[in-house]
Image (tube, rainbow, N blue to C red):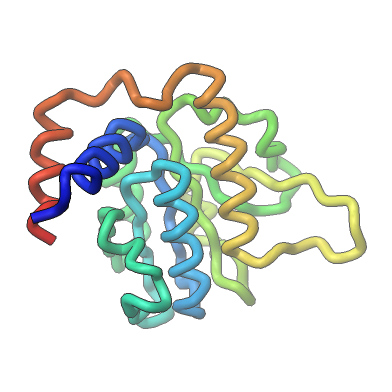
Length: 193
């Protein structure tokens, strides 16, 4: 049984969870990148990460490499783009793909206080055409150097912390939309882990 202090921390963390802010890892090859993304998601209050693996094997996430972040994040696995799209749209979530194209909008011009999922693509191939096809919009991180790409875990952190900034301004930390039954059930789940 966790100590009283640990229980307080768990409850505080749960009260800050943003259930309508999600990250999708699409065929990310390096499990260290996925682990870094999970750590960032936990820090930003993201409660669920979707793993979409159609070309790569699902990553093996050990306790050391993920710093146990996977213990605190719900992970949904998907083997098809349609399955992912249906799951996110069923929850009323707009899907954004990270892609530097003509129609892409800056991450600073997106209203991240709305239900949102961010598709992060493979380290070498980026977001696939299939993922772009299910996305509601494309976003990019403004960059001013010669190299036009960032490490996938770094890019995820930048986008998530723009969402955090906006949600902090909107008084979403702690999250007023969480009900006490969900918090109690999740706390019990965490205690049993």
